[in-house]
Structures are given as structure tokens and as C-alpha cells.
Image (cartoon, rainbow over all chains, first blue to last red; front, side, top):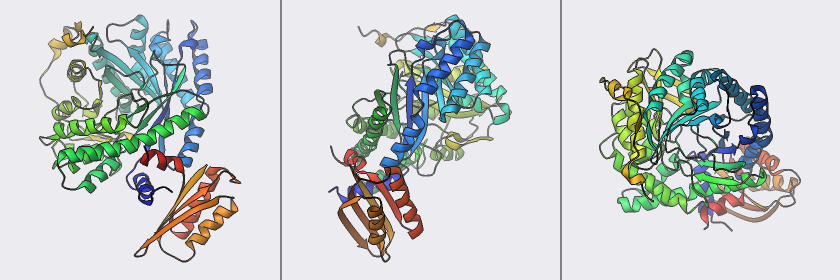
Length: 452
Length: 89
């Protein structure tokens, strides 16, 4: 028989330490929906998504019951719509976003991602129209998520696109001002975006992916925290072992759920994403892990080192537990979605500069950070350019999800509720990067991109 | 197909009988039982064969959860694969 301690450990992880499967995300290709006629395109998109993912939610619930583990989100990601929109105008793209929303509502899923464009080297007319539609699309829908890839290590950084994103984020904040600029929480700017990411708001179904695929994102900061506390006063080599073993167990559950979902939905298994994804719930915090490792507060000097070690140990433990690992795979450090991060900002221990440094050693970037509503566009562009450079120079994914909360100033707070949590408005540097951003063009790819 | 039923909580009279009765009602065959009582704290683990279950696993698990609520105990029925995946290589 199974070992009693092992059984009780699993039960404790699920019921006391918030172990859950954060998301089962079904990726769906929309390439066969292409049509010159807007109405026909929208109809085909709606039909395909609702047919392909028809059983996603019910199968997710069945698996939840069978293994006794909560599956918090069921989501769909689709081909970046700028690739299938063809001749759509910006208005047409807004209609397409509404179609995605209707499909998501019909399925009962939590989010749908893929209102996206890949513009790291330049923009097509279709990309341009999609970007123009983002603010309205996010204002008129609740479940649609948007992402734009503005750089890769191979192509360099498209600064023209970054300049445009600054303006798009501001418009989105304005159009959703009645809900504390929540639209910006559904929009991510990426460097080196992964094509199989199951997490929102950045999920889309990449061009190299099959017709449909099941990707799973695990969670479990609470489990890692508890394991570290149990380990007591050991040295860091021993602590790394503890984290690895815990990550292995967490990821095995992800692998089990992913293969079972793939089997039941008759859809190939894609990847398990090894990210430690926090929630605003107490005890489900990445910041808490860092503090359990020995920091007085996240943001203290030493935070980057602790996070680098945590991130590495999670990957090492997780990679052996899954047949295919992908997506973002690393510790997430969103501010609003992590009670420990919020507390660190509130006590003045964690600044945006420290967060930026932390993103150099983990996924995914400056995430869910609220800044004053009157932040100039160019400053947002500067924030994006800095973060994207870290990704490009380090050949890793980085991203920015920043919320210039309309009408709010430093010291105020936004509160979105649910998984999106709440965030104090953070201070920014008052100096302008406007002349640098105005130069436009592309920052060339770094020398180490020339590997062939 | 096997399921693991875990029952934890304060010890009281007839816990095993009540859980066994649900198993019998739904034709879950109990293969092994192990239990420990530490002070007043009770932990029981049951391994059941659920191949011939008369209802869906979801219903079976729901009725055990209900029993747990009625008796003030924490009762969960989980497919054994989750334990095998987590703890065996």
C-alpha cells in the first residue's frame, strides 16, 4: 500500500498549502478560419472555438473531482489574431474580440488569450490594425486577453512598436477608467514570447503548434514555503534540495492532470509550465518563500540572489517530473497578485527598480504593477524598453503588464478583486526618456544572437 | 481502478463503520485500512477497489465529502494515481 505519510502529505499540500493546478489551457489554431468577409471570419472563429473546447470545462471539473485537486482556471488560447485577420480594419478587430468574448462565455471558461500580434521586427498592415483595436477591444470585453511581442534576441527590439504600446496602454487605462483601468491587466508586452504559454494575459497558440493542444500551468508557492519552513536552519545547498524535491512533486501532479486532460479531450498534450504562480490568498505567495529563505522583507538586498536560487531549483526539480516543459516556467513575481509582494511595497521595501532586477533571474517580468495615472506615455515606453532589454540581452522571456491607473497617484491603491488582486500605486523616476523613445527604429540584436 | 479515502479529524465513535457503509452502498470494495490515533486526532486511510462502483466517481466522492461535513471530519476520496505520481518515480 501507499505510504501513510505520503498520502497525508498530499492531502495537506492540497487543503492547507493551496496546492492547485492554476490552469488547463487549450490552444486552438484558427488558421482554417481565414476569410475575406468579416462576418464569415467571426462565425468560423466562434464555431471552431466552441466546438473544439466544448468539453474543456466539464472535463476539467471531472479531473478535479477524480484527483481531489482544484483546477482554478480553464482557458483557451488561439492563434495570434493578427495572423488570421487579413484585411480586417481596427473596427473589424474589435468585432473579432467580441466574438472571442462570446465564445468564452458560451464555454464558461475564465479567459481567452490570443488577441495578439508578433511585431518584433516590424508590423504588417494587419498588425497595425490589431494594435489600433486593442484599447477598445479590452474595454468592450471582460475575458479577452491581449499580448504583443515587441522584441526577440534574434531580431532585436522594435522601438517603434514600444512607442505605440505606451500610447495603447494609456488609452486602455482611460477607456476602462470606471473600473480602475482594469483593461491594462489584460494586456502584456513581451520579449521572446513563448508559443505555448498557458498563463494569462500572455497566452496564445503559436504558429508552430498543432491544430489543438493541452498546456497546463501548475502553482504551489504555499507548498514550497511550508517545505522551507519545515527544513529549518539548514544551509542553502540543503535548501535547494528541499525546493527541488517539492517542485518535483508539484510538477508530477501537473503532468498527471495534463495527460489525463489530453486523453479525455482527445487532444495532444503540449507542455507543463513549471511556474510558481502566486495568488492574493495568504500563504500562496512567492514573496513569502523569499522571506522564509531568510529575508526580512522581499526587496531587501539579497532578494535577487534568493529568487535566482529558487527559480533554478524549481526548474531542476520540475524538469524531471514532466515529459515536456515549456511556457514561461519560472517563479512569477506579480505585485497585485501576491499578498507578500503587496506588503513589501506597502512597507517601502520593494521598488520598481528592485523588481526590474529580480526579473533578470526569473519569469516573467514587471507584472501587475500599478503606476500613477498621469505617467507620460514615454515613461511607460521607457519602462517597457528597459524590461524588454533584459529579456533580449539574456535570451529569456520578459514582459511588462503595467497599469497607469487613471486619476490615481502614488500612495493610492487599485483593487481588481479575484486572482488579479490589489496593488499600491508605485513611484516612478520623474526624469523623461522622451527624446530616446522618439528616435524610434530598431535596437539591433545582441552579438550573442549570432550562434550559427 | 483504486481510490484512496482519507479521513482525518477528532476521534469519535463509529467513524470506520460510517465510511464503510458508504463504500458498501456504492459497491466500493475495501482492500486495506490503516489508522492511527494520536491524542484525540484520528487519521484513517482506506484503499478501495472502485472498478465496480455503482455510481460515478464524482458522486461517490461527493457523498463522502457530505458525510465528512455531517460528522465534522475531513473526508476525501482521491484516485490513487495522484499519490503514485507524486511519491513514486
